[in-house]
Image 1 (cartoon, rainbow, N blue to C red):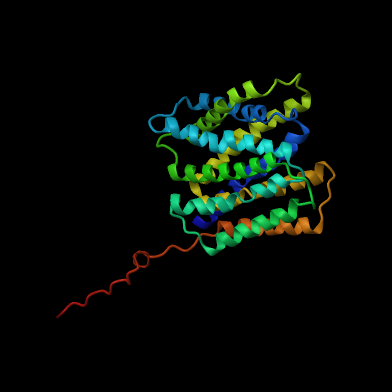
Image 2: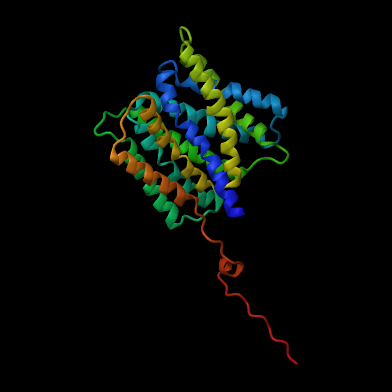
Length: 306
């Protein structure tokens, strides 16, 4: 039963990266161009304030600084770097670079969470990066340095956010909706002054812009982050990190279905490799017995002397 619950939890958590896979298409087709601070703020702040109003509870104690840290890593800085990479990098290169995120989680999980770096996670990291490369790489392209740095920074932010969210957990008595609202609000508020000072307001919003922002606020932020943080609380950090590899698969499928892009045989092979990497990333190492953990053989039962 526990194994079945883990599979269902992983499948539900994987819906969040699937929704995020539409971010590349929404950014390029529906949002005002070259405004990553605007996209990040609008994506996070309205939904965060809505959840905060529902929960009617503010952070207390150490969570006055922990919630903003998680809000920056999971929401603010991550989404800003994601949008910056999506605006500046062509052909899914951003997705290819950000596929290094599980590798960062595997590295961070050892010192921060005590999770062992086994052979399967290492193999899954290699397979995931290779599968994403087969899926999105389209030959020689000119790389924008700022876009590449943004993609690497986004992968690091996401990995750090997953690790610290797992390490700190959720404060007692705080519901999942409130916990998500803290982070969305913090991430949006931190981005707000940067947007107002560094970017101009759009001349006007089209119907496509409104639809794009509505998608980001509802599916792309509120619902997806609730599911995502629920999964982090119930699954190992490394297992959650591999679920994020579903984003480039959804992005490629949407390009095929909506933008009439082709899918080559190598891209289909890449999807299969990514799927196998995700499955391998969900396998947990068997727990050792107490005697095996301490390095001592189990003691024999003493005989009773007649």
